[in-house]
Image (cartoon, rainbow, N blue to C red; front, top):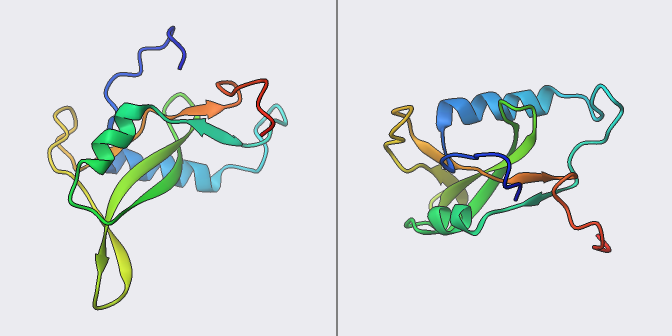
Length: 120
């Protein structure tokens, strides 16, 4: 991850996450400079540990666009509803900053944070 940027907390309020996902879904396939959307993400271990440290059955990743205009993944724990067979999103309560339910971010888009020597 870029050392120049202070990413802050990996916790994102659900309200903010909804805005990011909506911005991503409404964005064209290419940005203003004709660049394609993000092809991969660098995911901090801290993000994965926090989302996995819940009573969950699986994890869902939503695509979004953060306040810096970067495409990100937002991670949400899910729990299987045995009656319906649907994995329901579950949220940790109490984001200190936004007083909102929590989803997890701090992913870095690739490019530019990719491995230039990777065959992928």
